[in-house]
Length: 159
Image 1 (cartoon, rainbow, N blue to C red):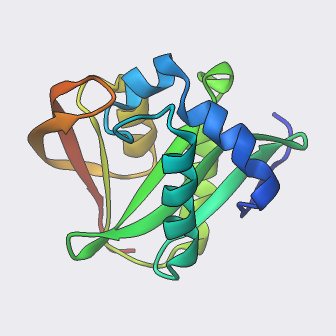
Image 2: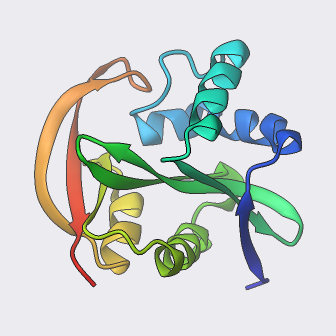
């Protein structure tokens, strides 16, 4: 596979990221998304908050000069959690697995948390390959599906 680069998200990435995060099939798979993934102003406002908070990390995943997703970390309920979003056209190519491995090399915080819809087998596999272990589940409203959805909660222990 071609060289992958993780780099800070740039202003010029926003259109690509918005299109990736508003793709209906991707939204359904992720489940826990913005209330209205097609709301461009809501997306811009959210990204401004994310990028302006020094406790957050948001990186573009670049492959062959093309942004194929994002990956990052953020504080949630007293611990740091990881998150990623891969362009649907790039699913199944090992991109999330490679990007997560790169992120974890530079992210010393442990333990780390992660969450995925319990029926998102691909995302759960990515997390488990990186060493995350299931520590529980929760059911909450998932805007991407407009319904209550079970979410698997995972943790990566100490180094």
